[in-house]
Length: 492
Image (cartoon, rainbow, N blue to C red):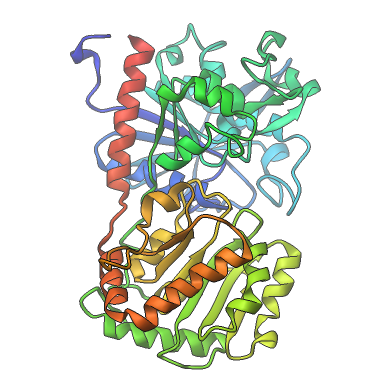
């Protein structure tokens, strides 16, 4: 281990990702890439981010850098450019290559993917490293996110090993093991790496090139977005074929919960709400409930419990089970509102909820930031029956707004929601295990029973939920511990 004085107090960290808020977002990955670097910079570290310059990225406020950027891609060199923006202490670079990135969607049309995604994201990963050389800025840590950037640690251990970048420790965060970046074997030459890396101990998975597997094999340390998910991906089914490799490296894996921005998600200051409230003024919450009921076409009944969902309409989120269970659930004395988009069949059913159960159920297909905030503030319970949930953000927003989460006991939902204890009244939500229409009916019925029969418990749970905090400052400190460990291992 190197002497203590060899550890820099101010770390230089490069994040490589396929998306980041507020520039481009398709899911929770963008929220992490938008928030974590800012929290690290606020702690005094030199933080930089590399993203693709997609066609959807607004170039206002971006500065085009003077140098061209040559990026090795297989047997050829692709040329691009880079742009820069400095905001809140974080420098964000955007790699320009119109053929690869100036397209309607980041990854492919809805339900599909571009056939050259391996080349596109190898260009991103190798281009980010080339940018370090071009700017003569060499990070202590290179933090890569999901399969899109997972090949960068492979490059650090091979083509970059004898360069200044070879001293950088690497950290791979697995946001969702379902997405692995698997491609036909004949695309291996596009990586520029030799066939000796196409083995079951490296980048080969079931006869295909797996960028995520390469990252797992080569990264100095691994993280994922909750402690429970870190355990789940070491086993079937959530390891998705990579559980053996993750188990081999489990001593190098850490689960770190995401945070949320409490300056945005705060019912005391939220501009989207008709009335602001706090844990000490819960009575004011009733105005938010009435506003929500009227807006989505539900009967304005203040005493009727309202269950909300803000979700992707996808198999992962359990929407198929929700739709099967709804006819029986809606026989109970309650109301339901769902906001989301995704699977076309599910969208069709959600869209017609109000005609099937007028005044009692409402479905809005799409996404509205304002309405999402109003659902968190106006619902009594927030439903997240996910098949798997690596980290989850919806339950964190719901907790802050006093909408008690009803969650399946998986991933980050286990780590952030404390299930109700009938004897003591303690808890911040309701959890269940078996994802079936019957189990979903039972857990919703349990929550409604507590609402009607244990109102003092419900109020105490709301106060406890609203006082719970999952901050990016806490998460950033955990990542800094990982970075320092990675640097010791890399240089030790």
